[in-house]
Image 1 (cartoon, rainbow, N blue to C red):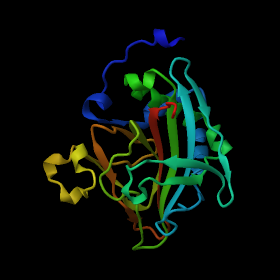
Image 2: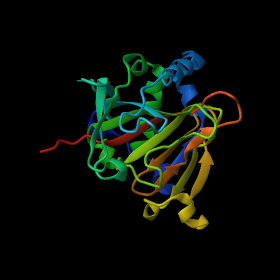
Image 3: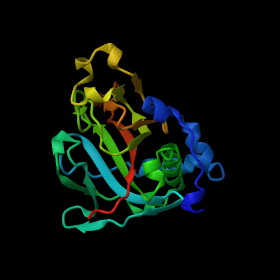
Length: 265
């Protein structure tokens, strides 16, 4: 398929409201010819025992990161190879410019998404589904698309501990779109998502009036998902604490973001 034959894409809830929610079935049906339960279990296993965040080793935050390129007119999805880091091993660079005040202008490196995860068909179909939701934006249809794939787990071992996302306030990411897919949630309280207008970026949810909260919800089951259109909203997820059961609690999330892949001269 050539670029000229790309058909128009109708406006969606994501384009009009600035955010949208998706159900597990949206993704499971894309792997109906496979064993969806097995693919999900294999993906969940990739979130177990992840390295701690090298920039916040005491935040109870664990993560991996990978990058890919999507070509809209051919549907081709290609992972970019990781680099070798003397401390992290295989790693991938992550840059948010000035959008994360906690790491303003910093070029961070995170342990790479391993080859076994990159080969998971459910992960591939999740990425392709997300791409389809984003391609109504002409800017993403006219050239290759850069995709960031972030594996993130918040894990608390003891009662009273907290695991804190970054940044811990309403914010925008800088990428055109970010999709969040729950991979696992066990024995935790918290992890509440809040969506608000862009002007609320930099504030805590309790600092804004109730009428500015466009949505407030909690992802509960594997593959419960949502997406934000960055220029239209700010968003937040609250820290998590261990639940009532006498075992560690964790919330594992897959984050996928989309930006135009443009040359830098």
